[in-house]
Length: 327
Ligand SMILES: [Zn+2]
Image 1: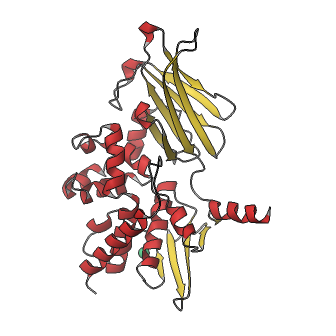
Image 2: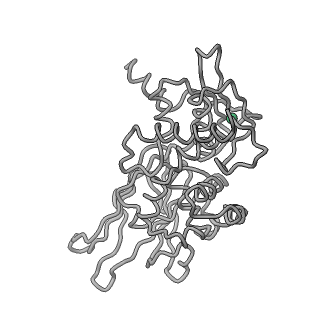
Image 3: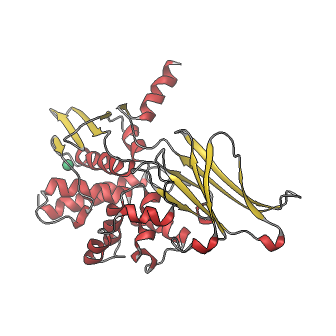
């Protein structure tokens, strides 16, 4: 089989997997769910030298191991890469890394690895998913040439910034030289543009620029991620945005005035920085209200799976399923 055939096979296999579940309000593809639905053993271990491995014994016993030492986006991409090896019928593969370039991988990348990369990229960032986020946020082709928008797109797709750059090449939004140039931009700088110094508590944490356009979506985030919620008060009519359900789950870690707000490009009169206190599934609800009459003009509600990356052991979902059966 030629490399080209192998890549095309990966593209069509990814399209078949992507088509199965309805994606609903979820902005990213549920890759752990796709593995669980196929009853494929998926184990997380603190591997130092490998990002992941696909293991097959006599083509009968098959399983996937992925390291716990990566952040959520790279971990998801590795799970997808190993699922690719499995569905494409490859042999055992020990991966020291995976390639975010997908089908744009350099010619030196072995055919099976390039195919697994392609599968991962097509599964997690197919044109349909990319377009859904771009439309919602009004990220035009031009805006997707700006690093800050590519970064926000990558968060909503649950892939790394680099992987998003290359998915945009596959979708013919960027050229290869443009992607190469764009991916040089340090993500650290993009985060700093969005959040005040000191508000990012760990270097893995991402910063989400949240606007009303995110309303009614379900996003998957890291447990320490910071949400910069951009709101536009209708102050002359007495309406202000207010965080609802401000219970013990969420901390408002800061607020910022409008004049500093040009990093994201969204019109806003205020930015609130919030973070969840515990990992888990949370709801971020803001209401545009007249405080004295409780009249509500608008509402932002976002469901957040803030568990973050998988920890050591079976995938979180599998563990929960087992517990429910025992209970
Ligand atoms: Zn591989």
